[in-house]
Length: 302
Image (cartoon, rainbow, N blue to C red; front, side):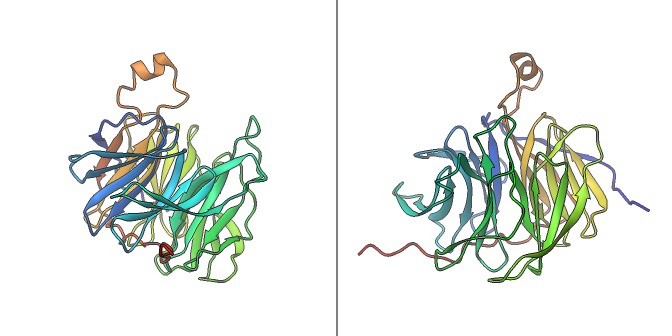
């Protein structure tokens, strides 16, 4: 029988009013939350209490990123390519273009437990978007490989089981999250359904896996975040007071951070959704895993 804990509610942490907030990532070393505004082409950061809000401008839309062992350097997934970004100097070191032959851009991404960066693409050439974009892995040697997963229109929900043997992912146009067997440096295999959204509204967006192996998924258009046990059974949900929650992160003390978006909301909708595009927080009973850092390093100058 399904055992669901009573719904918790998130409250506003930072009134960032992002056009398309995404990529929530908790840094357990600096005790800071990072996220992106894709359409605003910005990286954002704040403390656990919402203080010390900082922004960095990007040269193009920023879709996803990863921490590295250098606290001042991030791996960033810009719309067209991957690069290293130095927070101190504001400089970028280009790594590789992604799908230059397709009308796609980078979208959701997370590091696997072994330090490789796994991400997917979003189609921008069709209305509705078409399932043409791939899922990729950037390895520590900075080599890029396409994973043997079905193409997606809007790749999302990328996450990994704590032991690294399973990868979660979805196409947000399909109201189902999938799971596959995963090996570091090896093939993905045995793609199968993990959890189907059963509410009348909401599409699967960004996810994070907690220390107990539960997958938390932000459900765009559904005003909620849902936790699924490792067997796909729903066990908890958090109500989010905005229409479009987009991505989640969990710190070591069980605080759940949720980004959101204003894009595509009408003036009337925004009038009743004053904090759309903000970052929200809720206390849960589940602790987060330490965020895996990208294992690659920026090439030395010369």
